Length: 160
Image (cartoon, rainbow, N blue to C red):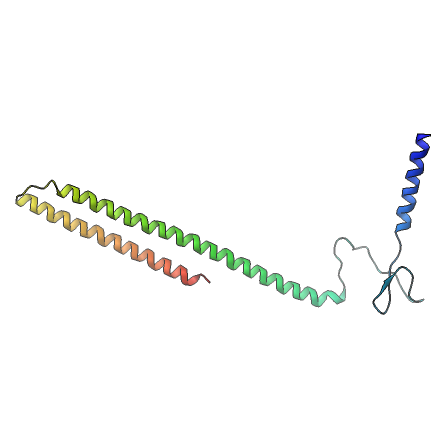
């Protein structure tokens, strides 16, 4: 009895599945219906439904969508480019800060060494040498910082 019930359910579901496959007709006024509009009506090919459906009427729409897609790609590319520029600017700013910190540390070390100079000619000569070294360190750091600042300014003008 159980097998008969299962067989009946299976047969009914198969019959319903085949009856659900009907043809669709498109009439001249653009209406779709299950019955032919006239004797020359042919069924619409629905084999592509579910994957890609295209008609002649959609050609203008697809051209607009293609333009929108191209515009979106451009916006995305511009956004990515700007993000890369921002990261590069941040990297350069951190480098500039390191250069300035290194300059300050080196000058501080030289000042500490100058405190040990004797109050004689050798000590005065040594302090003069330390002052010249401090000047050279400052000039080197200033040159590097100005180079970094120019690179940052160029990146900021490249950013849109």
